[in-house]
Amino acid sequence: MIRTLPSARPDTAHSGVSRRLRHDLYAAGAAVLLVTAAVLAGRHIQGTSHTLFVGWPPLLASWQPHLGPGTPAAVLVATATVAYGPALAARLPWRALLPLTWGTAMAWIYSLALIDGWRRGIAVRLTTRYEYLQVIDRFHDIPAALRDFTQHILLHSPDNWPAHIAGHPPAATLTFVLLDRIGLRGGGWAGVWCITVGATACVAVLVTIRALADEVLARRAAPFLALAPAAVWMGTSADAYFAAVAAWAVALLALAVTGRSLWWAGASGLLFGLTCYLSYGLTLVALIGATVLALGRPGVRERPALLVPLLAGLAVVPAAFTLAGFNWWEAYQLLVTRYQQGAGGIRPYGYWVWANLACTVLIAGLATVAGLRRTGAVLIRRRTEPRGDVRLAFLVAAALLALLAADLSGMSKAETERIWLPFAIWLLPACAFLSRPRAWLTAQAVLALLLNHLLLTGW
Image (cartoon, rainbow, N blue to C red; front, side, top):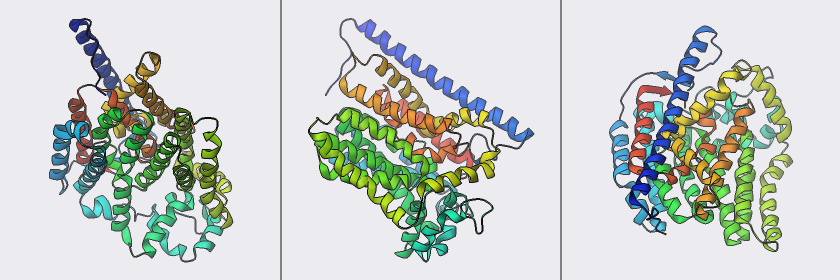
């Protein structure tokens, strides 16, 4: 589908484009001010009361300008994507575009991670005292570990779990236990797993957009998904893997409601169940799923037929863990107590409730901020906008709503640059509404390169 500007008066059309671009720049400028305020206020708070527990507010990072072996590759990937990405995304066959987007995303994530070198950038990220690989040996008897899991969540309990194990349902830890069991041991393999699987999230988002909205919009979004600043934290963080599982749950649901497929509905439910047992906070992905159901609008006759396999699939993972002796709700309540026992109970809500949004700007980029402005405009004028645009706008708005709910909960004070990856990945398609994609892609790439070269990030 080719879209053109109204042809009534060329000067009026040009004026409209210029006005929209000017408003995009205003939105991006406001985002820059938000980040600047978060940095300055954060440095003051951390310098006076030391209650933020991050080295370079609002990010968990330290100021350390550096180059590394990934620098040339990162610059090359960024340059090639900016130069050729939009044209290739528009012209390639769909089946070729998906693997190319995945490959580009992987190359971008790996090259950014390798700026810190293989060991520091990938191999040891998941082996620190807070991370999953620290407890592999404690899962030699998996059923026993699951039965006793909640006994070790609280900070003062015997043999309390490290922060990330206590902070997540056991499916997160079991992933790395199973990798170890099949011979993929150590931080290197764990990092490769998270990056390789995490990069597929962009493909899942494209599949969803094409199914629910418009293939043209999916193609416009593809380069922005591949070259996202979020890649700085997708290599290496388990949250990248969580983001991919959640994204595929949504994508399969979109295929189910648009193709009336019972198999896709069951597979989607299975992944939604797994998502909830990877991270407590990802229950909010249900808001995105509900939007997909609303946009798909299965008929009265098809709705029960799709809901039965969806709910059946959704029950599989919770049933398995419950039968194994793990109580999700009890564990979550204990986690809330554990959160208050640690840094989460000290970090000031009044700062993080808005500084978290500054973190979101850094992981999503200024192009996404401008895209969100246009998303709002589409929703306001939805009666006169193309159907595909409105559908995409609703999908992006649902992700933003989920992110804001996580923010207001107070259970995400700091470190949201990685925790919110599963939500941020759904904000990036807003860039499909932008004109001048190469300029905005350049802004995205420059932001990511500056972040990874000037800061030593914690994830």
